[in-house]
Image (cartoon, rainbow, N blue to C red; front, side):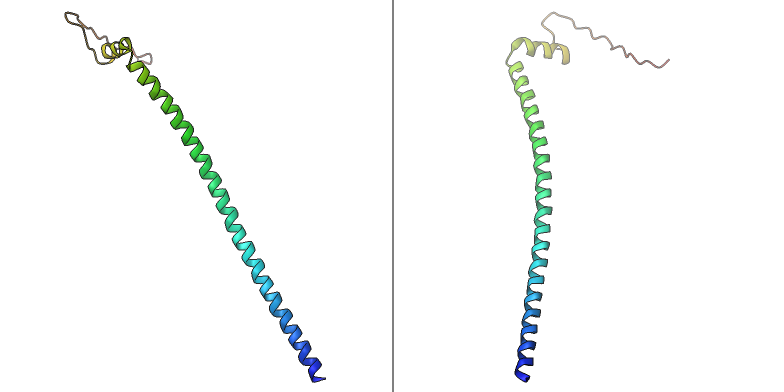
Length: 106
């Protein structure tokens, strides 16, 4: 009779230990799985931001390439130098008129 009770106690203890181990394994799987999901969402957000930044940089690159092409054109360089920096040819006079503000305060 005592041996039967000891076996039952050992069996109950083994089940308790196994249940406790399975519970700890389940908890750790949920915990680390949650962390992985959070990391995944964070990385997806960073990817979206990087793609937006990449698109902006591509647009800026196109603008700079256009400017580079324009600067290799002597007519464009002359247009910019004369209009923006008031460079004149020899013997030429440049008159700059004030711009008319459309929203004048009366």
